[in-house]
Length: 199
Image (cartoon, rainbow, N blue to C red; front, side):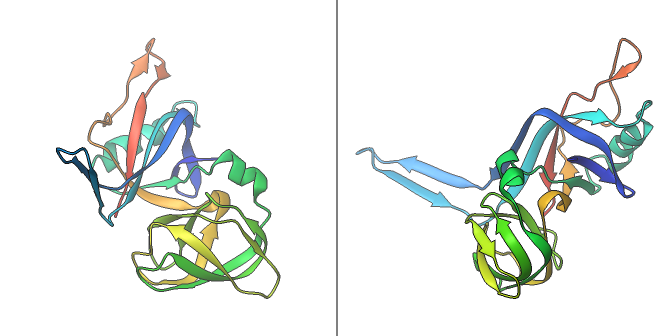
């Protein structure tokens, strides 16, 4: 289940429609001859726009989270994986990662099965979330290389989390209500919230 994660459980799940976008600054300019020049920055973050469904009848956990975290405290979310990725993934095992800062490829060992492209992953030694860009089939006791986007911001060491357990550290965007909205006096409605990856 994807959503706001706190104290070992999801306290509010994401509802559709849900948008998970990559925000990477790109500068585009056209000359008088209509030739286009494009410059892309290396900085990148993930952003989520979604509704929230509280998982408790009175939803006090979500309200406390919205109020106390505000715009400056870290919020943990379980990253939504693409439905096609979930259906195609057969990988099992504990993934051990090795990769150097700035690289787009990471050596992985300890898995058996397929990690499809489009899978969100996270390495244990830093909090940035990455997306795989190639399909990789692993064989027991054989290391293999996966390609990731964006390039590694730090060297990757330790384990790699994949699948439905990937946690991302986020901040509520400044247009999110720091409190609660009630419909009909009883039903809580936070409206759409935006969470941005904390870099």
